[in-house]
Length: 296
Image (cartoon, rainbow, N blue to C red; front, side, top):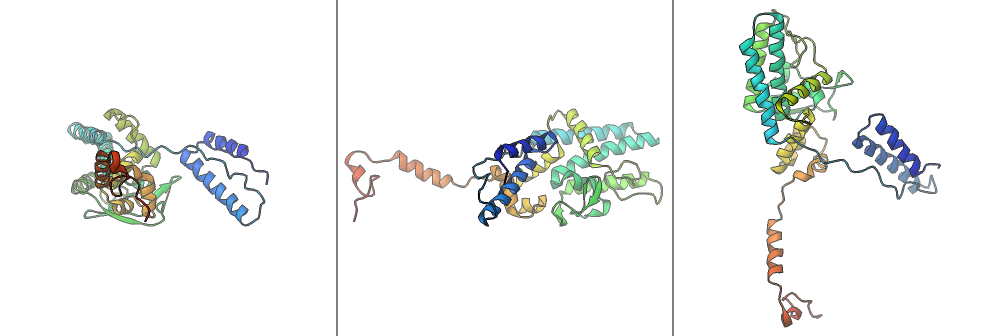
């Protein structure tokens, strides 16, 4: 009953100071306003204190990486991997460094191909890939492995080059590991792949690579946006929904509506022709000649 817009705006400031993103703040406000609106409709309260209050500013559109930026990331990761192979030796530290840059290459390739989230990439196991079909059924949150964000597993087909890179690197890593001591994790902190890399470490390694590639502001999540934008721009809304793991296509359209291809070219041409040939003079009052029709 004592709620006011001023108190809600103060809550916005507290949430932002605590590290909440604009999306999180906006989501909390919508939930709050919906709850208050329900209470008002049911006559639980006599006044709707937030009826005329506007929420926080709109979140900026999703920003995908450009094709040039993705190519720069892949080229840099490939060069690093080739350099590590050329300089590799049989020492433990040498093998660890080589596997590290090879994992960076696979990380970029998988993120740019699958559109998987960081937590999903961190939780990938070698047996999640069968042929070219990648099963995503786990994710890492608060450094704990659990279900995906939607709570449902999903399957997607990766590119031939991506699958070949995975299998080639896996075979090399297994050959270098001690017998019967090879672990399950694709992105690991040790040559035996028994200790999974955390989400924060994956993000740190990607930032180091993006700085080297000259892609300021690049992130693994922006590669996810690149996959979504590519598919939505081709009109493949349902394919984008399935690949990204959204619960429904409405979420995909809401987040990536800017990339939907325009299909109103014929309409624009018809309006253009109409405007170019608007009648003049007496014709303007004749039905069918641009003027208002006479009543029947």
